[in-house]
Image 1 (spheres, rainbow, N blue to C red):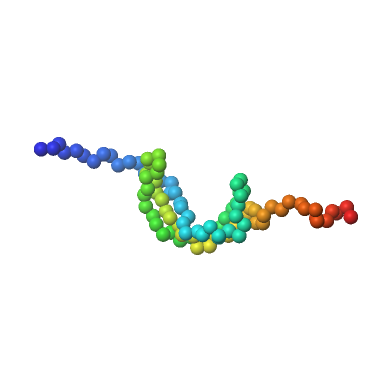
Image 2: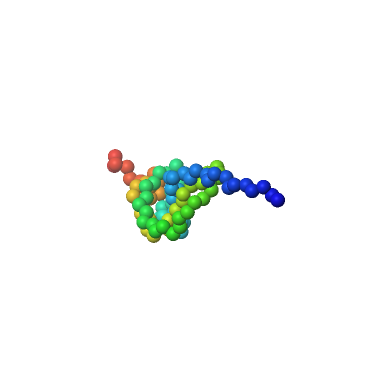
Length: 93
């Protein structure tokens, strides 16, 4: 007869919740950011999933998936950065 083994002690769950925003189309931004741009967003989202996930480092973490309903850029680049050209008028004229 095989020996009876007990289940190992449950792993500690990290209480901080990891939030993942899903279902946001890439064209949701009128002006896409470039590398090193810092932007602030106001997001309206609905929770579509909640549970526990094992992270790459092996730890268990609480996670929620939020489906984006609306997205607004509240600060950051709002238009492409323009460079001066030959036709720009000087203020000295």
